[in-house]
Each structure stands twice: as C-alpha cells, then as structure tokens.
Length: 197
Image (spheres, rainbow, N blue to C red):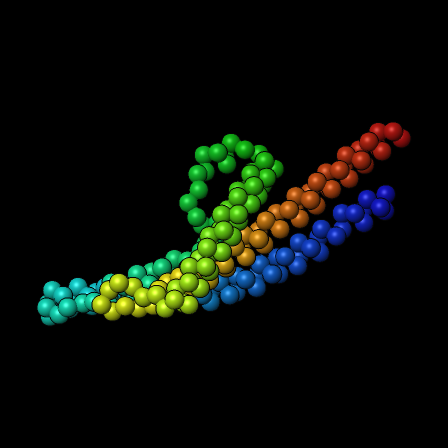
C-alpha cells in the first residue's frame, strides 16, 4: 500500500515545478505583451503619418510601410506565447462539447504535441533565416533598405518563446495525466481490495 502512494507522489512536485516555470514564463510574456502593445500603437502611428505625408503633404514615403510591417511582425510573433498560455488561438468548440473531460484532456495534450513539433521546426528555420540574413548582411529591396535580420530575429525569438510555452504545457499535461492515471489505479486497487474482505 505504501509503495503505491510513493509511486504517485513524484508527479505532484514535478507538476509544481513545471507550473512555477510556466508562471515565470508568463511574467516574461506579460512584459513582452506591453512591448507588443506599444509596437501596435507605433505601427498605427507610422501608417497614419504615412497617409498624411503622402496625401496631404505630397511627400514620398519609403520607410513607413516596412517599419509598420516590422512592428506588426514583431508584435504578432512575440505575443504568441502569451496567447498560447491563455489558449486564445482560434479553435473549433463543436467537438470539445461532445467529448468527456478526460478525452478532452487527452485531445488537448495530443494537439499540444503536434503544435509543439510544428513550432519547434518553425523556430529552428526562423533562426537559420535570421543567421543567414545577419551573416550575409541581407537588406530589404526598398530604398530604405533595413536589415532583414530584424524581422527574422523577432520571428525567431517569438517562435522560440512559443515553443518553450508548448514544452511546458505538454510536460504539465503529461504529469497531470500520469497522476490521474495513478489515482485511478489506486482507486481501482482499493475497490478490489475492499471487495475481497
């Protein structure tokens, strides 16, 4: 009996450690969300200035569009980890309402694993793009010619944060399912032992 209890206990501390790491990542993500909000406001101001300069002042604009795109790319990718933590991405709820809570947990965990595989690959490819752009000194083809390492770096950093968030979610899910499975086994064993007396 004590052997069964000891087998289930290690999952709980592991889950606590993972949840603390998740909370730490969320602190970083919340700070980055403020930066992303400022980037969105900056993109709106840049685009508004661009429209005003082109149509009212009749000035040529060569940097505004790319600056706005860089800000939007950074805000989109850097905020992805926080959105994933909230599970705020678009999802189809029709299936989830038909499934039991246990099956839904397994479904969500399997989706997290598939998403992790995709995001890890995407992060790796983003870092290779960033490195090539940085080493080769690649710039955009516009007259402004900003370095392409900027958007690739923002994309790589954001996808890396998203991948770390998914690793934590998959690990937490595995620990929770493992502890629930051992709890169910303990209950089943207790019922069988109670039935034999």
